[in-house]
Length: 290
Length: 279
Image (tube, each protein chain N blue to C red):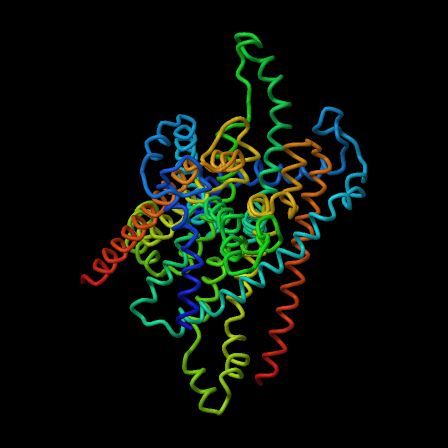
């Protein structure tokens, strides 16, 4: 018995030691920094930039000064996510259901490869394509004149879809791949139209992948900086661009901290609302299946 | 349907092909293309700033991947034995580290480190044996980039390795213990070979993340430059054919890494499969 507790004590010591570095990292580089940002958001800007201790809600009251950044983010991030879903779904469906077994793996790898190469470089390629000598020039030849693409919301949306499409295809593919193909046959045998089969069988069963994919993309988009910086040209900017400006250029740390806190809160609320909505839809469609 | 898929692949690869093509520009300006010359390649590699940025990025990414893999795997192994509030706290912290946008992590690290350094530097100077003049000053630099990158990648490794541990056959570990293997022996001979693919995947993901990350490094690198920061500022200065050469080299590098990883994993999988089939 004494032997057993000795072993247990030894084991818990090993466990504690294994967890020690991660715990330190979490405390010093996650909990403490976020706490500092929270404290700073109630402070005042020092005359030379940076932070001066205070307790005021002034920074939060001042948030409407950056309203455009928030409205841009909150329209273009959900819109970009939705576009990714719409464009990724047919491809994921093709890969999971239609593509032959031989080419499937190859095609799948080809979707993922771009995601593993530099995001910065892939985004900057679009400066060429959307710029004056790219697509607008081609359109000019066929008679559509003076179309401006670069530095517009459209350019930012194209950048978003291009950057995050692989991240959306993959989870949808995984859930479609797991789907029992006999269910589709059964639905067909029972006289359902392909559309009805899709809406009542395929789509509900692929919801987990769709939800995972859209959460991944949405979360990354909420903090996006590079795409608006490169393709929005200072005209279409996100909260991320406002944050870079506040911390690195104008050095207004307390206000920047308030903007960062607001961004995280809005993001968490949006995720919670989305999950609640999806959960309700899911129980409703389950009920309709019965 | 097939046509649609073909169109998407064109959409995914045309911009990359364009960059590669433009790196063989014979002209002096990036905006117009004259076919074809490799003249920009040697010129680019004589750029010492670029070489320095590339070296920095490789060192940072290598360190980050090693730290994150070791620490994350250690934590994942320990967490299977932990229950209750400690476990919940760890789960929550892991997901917070993954969910919080990179830009917020960058800002938080910047602000916290600057505050900490402002407090610590006078203290170090006062306590330094050789007098305040010779005292080292803590500053933003590679250390802070490594620390901030390791936070996110470590959380990623924890999630990946834990998923693998949960999918593992627990009876093997019990069998090993029944056969009087020491805990270390069980780990080395049973657990580790099984989680190895997840550990390797975690390492590669961490390396790629760190090598590719712009936004966190932008905030916490101080006066130092990593490759993405260098590329970003050269885009800001105006794209030259040199930028395209760098881009092509980076693309080639990550592609090589990806293929190497693929080959490695496949050989591993086959080796493990063969070993398992042997009586």
